[in-house]
Length: 290
Image 1 (cartoon, one colour):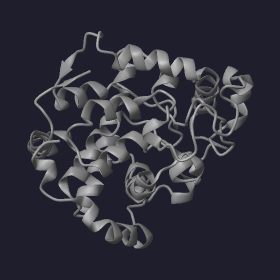
Image 2 (tube, rainbow, N blue to C red):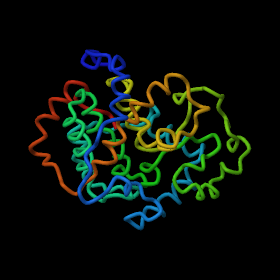
Image 3 (cartoon, helix red, strand yellow):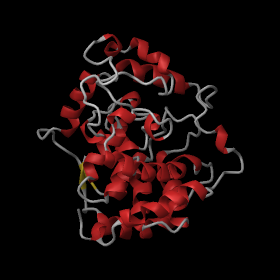
């Protein structure tokens, strides 16, 4: 972890953050109410349901192991990009799993980070808002969206019925595999999320790129922000350890900024870029290996 990320211990303020989560109000775009977000019963875009059908069918334990070896293994030749280059490259992507909005990803990143900055949060938190979805570059590198974006969930154990569109897991081979279709599957109770394999996607991929540079709460935000069955529905308690429980308020703290700041109003990247160049340089190396 960089010296800059050690300047303050964010856990010293965890009780204050928990109070903030309970009482804070978040920006609500005039065109849309909070309860209208994540509407999977009647998504705004037709592609969403088909996306999750493919995602739930193909995200097996073996598939996740294959992708981890392919993209996290030491033998892979990696492309080096600055964060700014990565952000601008991601601007070509629209997320097919998102039922709320179809803006390019750079706008979602800026809306998230700028909302966090407007609340006066620590600068590492602002940086998390900016980079949390950069792992979606996997799509730009040729991966199918169902293997990159969308809600994440543990593999290697029983699928929760609180995951979006749970009926599609009927076509997942792991649902019929006695190694994986029990409550604990391959895991032990209380093993901790760090020992649990999640469905493959941008969260884990981005976490692995920055895990040596940011405070632990920020890393949890990046790694588990799409794990809605945990941080929103309260599922998989039996897999958690005490550290996961301590980090949960931070993931919940991040979620409203990630979700409720989606708006057609576009921040102006050319005006914001100098601020973010300085912020990136404070915490991250000049380039990341993708």
